Image (cartoon, rainbow, N blue to C red; front, side, top):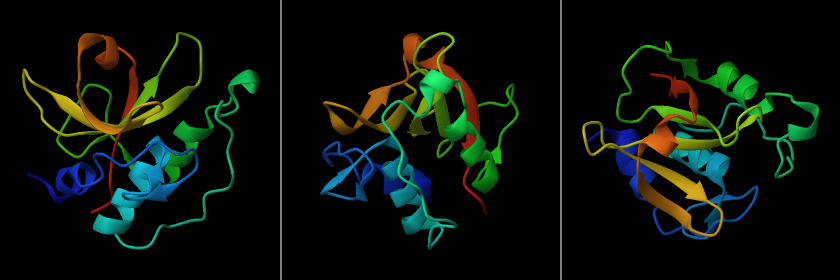
Length: 142
């Protein structure tokens, strides 16, 4: 198991809390990725400014996608998903991409770890409804 997947699974059970990133106390999907970054890579590369739950959806700005591209390595669209990849999801057609998860198992039983409103941090099956919402994949820096 990769260090990234092990770190992400260590967050399972953390309650969902918007804009938070404290294992066991609360996080949102970005907070989970930030927390795993701190555990695996070290200090965060930048301070995250306050953000709303809609992620600039009314303006149609892909802020999360742009920010991910600054600090993470975007993987080619046709490359296979690897354990530890950060998955960026578009939750509705024509909406901005605003949900993140970390690939855990890769196979017919593919899973990902994510912080989900109303559920906290969980490991979910990467079913076809989730998989078709993936718009980009990123890797943590080496």
